[in-house]
Image 1 (cartoon, rainbow, N blue to C red):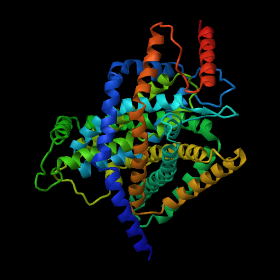
Image 2 (image 1 turned 90 degrees about the horizontal axis):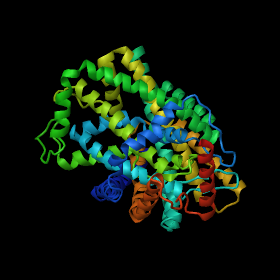
Image 3 (image 1 turned 135 degrees about the vertical axis):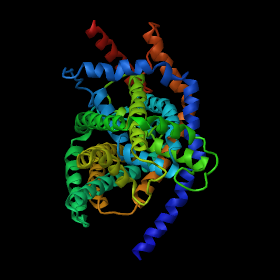
Image 4 (image 1 turned 30 degrees about the vertical axis):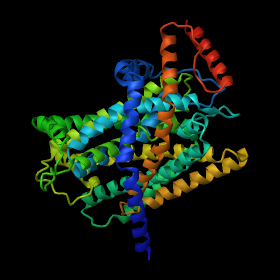
Length: 506
């Protein structure tokens, strides 16, 4: 009976997923990015240097320096907001997802992943600009925002905003399941290799419980604790992966030209080559590349903007520039290193396809580094996955909070707490699931999140342009009223805050 239920769910999900990640939505994602690129005059190119100079560069220079906090706002620093957002995007999709895209769509999928990321940089920028512009502040000074906010209050389609929030709740639960499943699976595989044991079910369960407990401790502290944990783990895990990947690529440096040749030559493979791993149709190549690209960097989903909206900055454009760097770092650095490492490590013409993508990802490390590689991978992937779990717990929490904004504060807090408990319980349960159904369902809800968000981005693209122009006009010294919030009272408050901050800097 249970098998029939699972089979039925798989059939329904496959049908929905075929539409959600079909050509219409792929075109919508790409088309939105192209439209926003044109309207902002290729901001991701023309202002890329500025995105570095106003985000990551001053952050690195300011490490170790304490900054006074504004007691009126329950917010996090720009870097903590960025770290929370990047921890939600830099996950198993950056390693296992890229490997999966190459195995199922061929090396050419990497090219379309880059295309997705290029336009995704300005899509993510626009999400952050609108997220901060339409975010709200409660009586305790907590700042909340996200796609459902600018859909409800910007587009003024509240029903679509609620729908986007519901999709976000389900996507959050699904994402925690996917990430925990990969953590437990990876550590169980490492345990099996180290002990030559064929049974590692107890390892999966123990890992699931440990992840659930640690997650509970972190998410109880809210966005502030999530931001602090993410800001500590993200730099460490990213640097560790980058160093390992660069070493592996350097050791196989003679295969780099062939790796890039495969990516570009197979990107426009209009006709299947008649079998073999390099024989993919053009539609399969582009769909896998675009879908996995969006799954990895989340540009267009309207998810990472939830974390960015909690930032202490009053300037929407400043946080938007963090979004540009976020997608660049996620796709053009982490995902590209994964792809090149994979393509320089294996010969795709002789590669066996009878192993799971997670096992192939571990093998990629062990082939080059042996047992040490397996050990490092067993650290990197769980860290990537765990930070994604805690980030998405916050996304789900804010979606629940938005959906039940009409009830009393006490009841709403109870409902949010109930969601957190359910989230933690499902983390432990998902560690024991072997079916890929959990990944497929989450893929579907991610796609469903994207549709209302993209519709709103297209509708409000003119506002994004106005807010952007307003910011850069002021930087040039023009006397124009800052566009910091859609709400007059908050706009005036933020204007005064900026004046005070500027006066203190002089």
